[in-house]
Image (cartoon, helix red, strand yellow):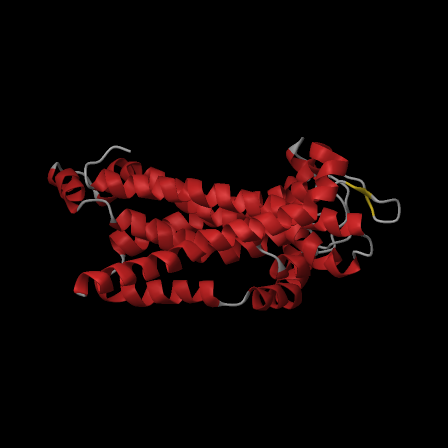
Length: 311
């Protein structure tokens, strides 16, 4: 009787576990079915062309892909150094009694709803960017060849650069938390051995801790990229949503794939228009799956290395 109960329990929890991948497969299948008319009509050109004309039923999401890549790139460039530096401080320099409270405060940032970030960005950060930061960037770098084109054009505050800044703040907690865990996973014997050879703490961090954890740090950055790719409401409020032109200037109002879905989903008044919107969602879903899988593999590699395994 006990054996039968064990088998029933094992089968029950196994079935519950299978609900997770089954749900993912079901979501993917439903999105692909809805997106099939657009996939059949436009093929790969859907991701490379920039004409988005619902009146003529011509759809190309190239500008949305560009906006997503630009804002995500800005977010990673701004957030990664801060996250890595803060993680090093928390694991190597901060007094032990302060590590847990500081870590908790950082993790609280991850629980703030994205709409709150968006409203804060719209009412507080955008005016600051428009009046002070973006003019200063334009004055400082505008005259430099090639680099100056990134800061050219009229300044409105609602642009791709602002979208990247908000995303940087939003992905900072996950970058910092994962990086801190990866750094904490470095064996203490590695640290003690380096210090025992007469190295300074800075030399120990740069020559032992960071090289040992580099795969895990890369995984943390990739997780941040996945978060930035799919963020919707906060970016929608600050990115501008008024241009499908691809411009080198970061001060150009634009769209991301997620903000395009949020803005236009209720406006889709034809089957092909709706299908094109869903195809953008399919692209986001596939990117999220691939990026998260890559990040998990890198983080797992760091954990396995700690145990002397080779993946």
